[in-house]
Image 1: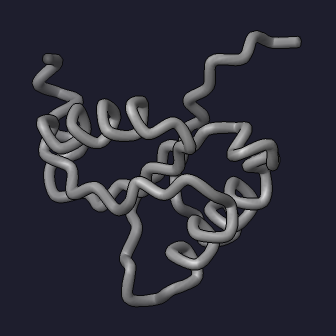
Image 2 (image 1 turned 90 degrees about the vertical axis):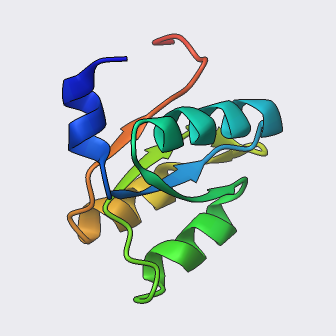
Length: 96
């Protein structure tokens, strides 16, 4: 594990938005091992937006899938961007 990454995530609350349970668990475990406090994982746009808009959640970063149960995750990305919360897309899709 890259120590610089672990330091960067230590104490950060990271929202995981992923609809595949095994991938979500693996991602949550990896982030936790790197010192992050995982929020979720949540499998849907609706649940993600609920956490993002809840002022008590305190999200610092997010990792999100593009396709959540057949629904694009771009509304989640827009909500994160509107709150200046850094995020990355983690997806199995190619550029097309």
